[in-house]
Image (cartoon, rainbow, N blue to C red; front, side, top):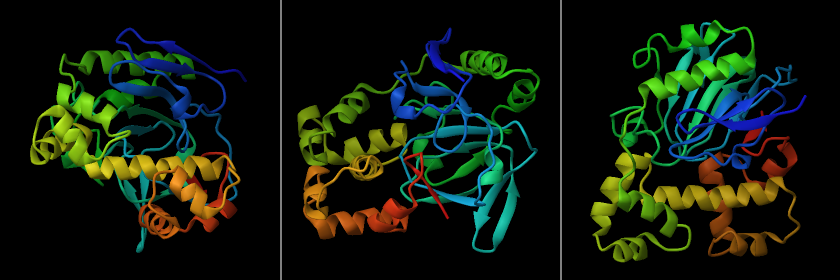
Length: 282
């Protein structure tokens, strides 16, 4: 089945029908990185059974809305066992891996926000949601009911587009945050602050409020994701060479950082990797 991306009335790209499309393939404008059918870390899916019950989701540092259309609950995977939670969630930015139940992936609709992009939809600071999954029912009480009514994915996405447009405000990312997101791709936090003409403390404050992570956390997550992408693509390099290519000081630094974000080592990731970069079967 084919897939395609189109622009919504409020500027958000909409993915319609078909198989999964990776988030990085989308070129959304304004604050939304993508809107579409969600299964795992992708935006479009056709429901299919999987042979395992859980997947480890690696942190990408972005805030998401995840809404189940198939069941009246999602699942929190805890050491004590699986616990039922709200069927519609705001998932805050994370720096740690999270276990999810594959049965929750049957039929979902979701939004992945660009860094700093939550503002037009919620007035709360993004850092208040760090490592949290909170019920969307309290924030948008009728949204899930409206999304369950349509009979096709295309119409569901149109309804989601309408909901986003209704809730959107004129609030945008602060200019310092927009500039910092660009500068941090190649500069340290200190260099970024000096380039912007503000203190590191001020940068930490405004960046965390808008993005949900501190500048240092965001830089580390981006570096980790570069490594994950390379491993998933099967790049043939010695560990030491890969570490340097991804911005680590050395192989030991790379190994420590990878484990701190994922709770697994790079070798385990390679052995367990599947089709989607940030999901590992457990």
